[in-house]
Image: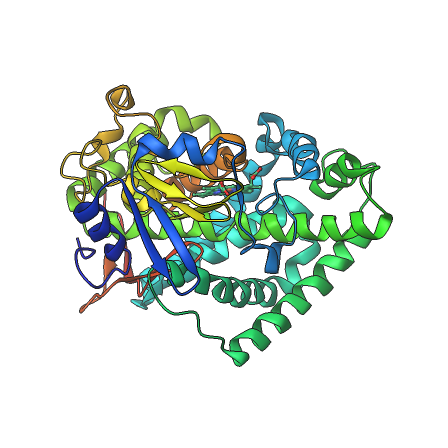
Length: 427
Ligand code: HEM
């Protein structure tokens, strides 16, 4: 595996974990940070009222579900829950299948021509298509690429907060700031049009659910702003995370032949060449194990930051009021007490019944507590259909001189996942 050593900036955090233990405090230019590396303290930070969200994501997502924890967050979370429920999921099945089919076509062209594929770019395109189609149908088709680029630029700016956690000094870059503002301006313009066009009587549309749950919570202008925030939130929360999970999974499969063979055998047995559907999930058990093991090693959300609203103490560390506490899935997912030979890729760790032997919260790709990811089922459904739909036809192979890397931003973005495609051969 490539990620031992300096190639992966998160190895700094792992070194801190292995040297100093479950709770590590350090001081950065922006103040004191306490890093939580163990499942034992997750509940205390993510489920207690003592800790609130930080402001970092608010630059882009305003007070959307991903960054707020006020009364409106509560009513909106309740109000949109049905959009994430089983009935809606069935509507999204064909959306995901269409997006996967588009990648099947493009990977077929690559397999025929021998051209290289940029895995992360393809998975980002897939996930962005899925979330925009699920939210707005075809309304955004024309602007999708430009919009996706704008989200990328905005998120890159916010990613500076993450590199700061790794000890990089906060340097104000006026060009990056101007680019971020321009990107957010474009996002606002597109989203503003979608918000204005909302039909509150459409019981299935995400925005009308948001609009209905916020009725009575502020002036029309405030509610409109909040609706904008919810759209941006879902676009951010709902695509870079899933594309990151999928991309690392292809990396792991391309570098672990026996797991790739076992996955292909399962896909052959269950699908026999037809496109996968949600009903197949129950039988795609190894596919699910591979996805989980990938999110263990490379959790798309590698840190979850909170601010203490009062003094506290965790694992012997005094946390001052206003102090930043960072729950770190990356180190928790590699904790030696929960995971033997933790850096090794082994999907059998997630074989049925295996979680009974691990401490609670030792696997938290979707967070924990009241802010637990609303889109977890959506993401897993999407990822399994994509892995199965593509994995049954293609063997991605790293290019000569393959040098993958990690670029941890708000999500754990991969770098340089360049591969060629060949078709799966069956006797
Ligand atoms: C593999 C993919 C994904 C991962 C790893 C992931 C991870 C997370 C995590 C760790 C949180 C908690 C953040 C916190 O505690 O502050 C979260 C929250 C959230 N996620 Fe996801 N997510 C994924 C996909 C999605 C998708 C596809 C959607 C939407 C379709 C989504 C929507 C949300 C929302 C709305 C929240 C905020 C929940 C709240 O605070 O009430 N996520 N996600």
